[in-house]
Amino acid sequence: MRAVRRRRTRHKVFLNLSKEEQRTRFLKRIDLPEKNWKFSAADVGERRHWDEYQKAFSEMLSATSTEYAPWYVVPADRKWFARICAAAVLAHTLMEIDPQYPTLGEEARRDLLAAREELEAEAPDGALADPYAARRRTKGARRP
Image 1 (spheres, rainbow, N blue to C red):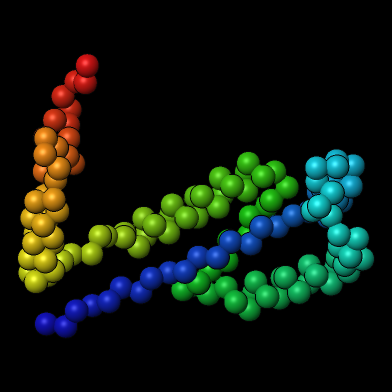
Image 2 (image 1 turned 90 degrees about the vertical axis):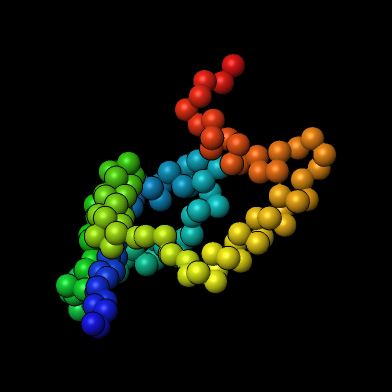
């Protein structure tokens, strides 16, 4: 029987800022001394090409968005909303790919058990051989 490999989708997020929001953010970067470091006068020059950039972005998104690797265009004028949208794309992708922890073969499992024995043998006098195992056993028990 041949193993079937599932095709994993790669999602991409494009944060789309409006021209007015960009203008507002640039002014804030100029007006607030703690944000001056974020400002570059060159950005204002590039802003003069807004329409050309928008056309290029549109062409790029159309040319590179596929069923396998779609673009999600997220309105980014409100950071809180953009973050929720990006998180939703991430959560959807994780649910879709259903990530699993890798499983170990017999040899690797034997190596783990040998390492455990060695580490437990190194416990100082009076210390638990495996403090984590002790916590697992009392999990759910009330702590004083």
